Length: 208
Image (cartoon, rainbow, N blue to C red; front, side, top):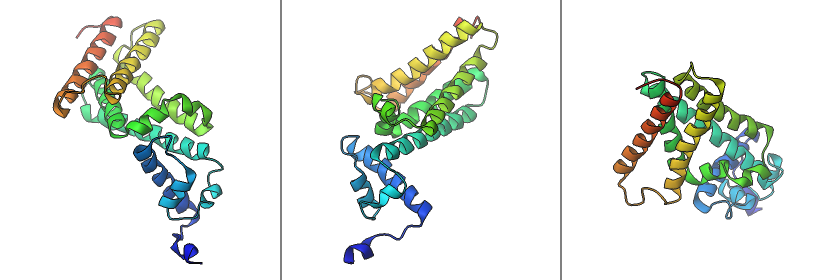
């Protein structure tokens, strides 16, 4: 009886949000191996059976967390692109800054979103969110080289994504910038993004 009183009286929608918030925090703290529905429920101050009302399995909750992660990634990319103003090249750099900043602030979530494990719990919503982030990137690259052929655009979309994703992944894994100060690492990232954009422009037949 005392246990029931200790549980937080969430409304239907509030419980779902509480579980997602608790799950995201748990994921960043403990990683995928330490992620359990029981611990999410404990942190949300509800019974261990309560998550079943919204998430049939741990995979369902992870899918929701990853989906929202992609929404946040897209928002970060869009915000930085708008902040950069200027031409299409400047916006592509800004978008890359947003991508890297999101990854640096949410390393475990970022790794989950792009991990092989994500294939085990992918849902239509997660697939759509991932595609939205990709299409945002694609549109930004194509805006830099509007006159290029379809083949060139395709290659540059792949190249630009590999450059941005590869750089921040190496940083997160401690393979790059380990001894750099935050300021130096940021400058290094901006230099990499600028070099990437210059390569895209040249491949598209333009000049800087």
